[in-house]
Amino acid sequence: MGKVIDISAKLTNERPKLKLAEDKVYEIDDRKNTILKLNQKLKNANMDDVSFIDEVIEMTLGKEAAKEINEMDLSMSAYQNIMIAIMAAVMGEDYETAEARFRKEKESL
Image (cartoon, rainbow, N blue to C red; front, side, top):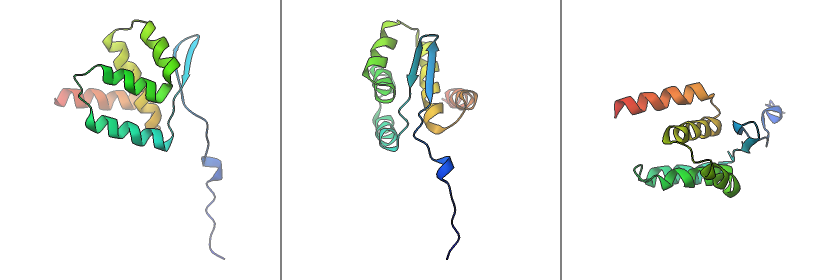
């Protein structure tokens, strides 16, 4: 019999969460099919169109969360932080790593 590599303990359906305030915690949909759709959207995105941000938030956090976040009337820099946090979560990275990559990419533009 061949060697069995057991990764069952590494597989989980537990979703990462995004906390924006004490009472504002949202589950991030990091499932494969959602991320494939997100990647397709990123490839075809017009980064000058800010409605793209709303679409990504709705896709990963859900319609209700997107509505609540929109009602917070946040600044663009706050939305950048939300987007960085979402991307960090779906990539399985910590926020600081994703933020450093974002800043580096922004500087190269």
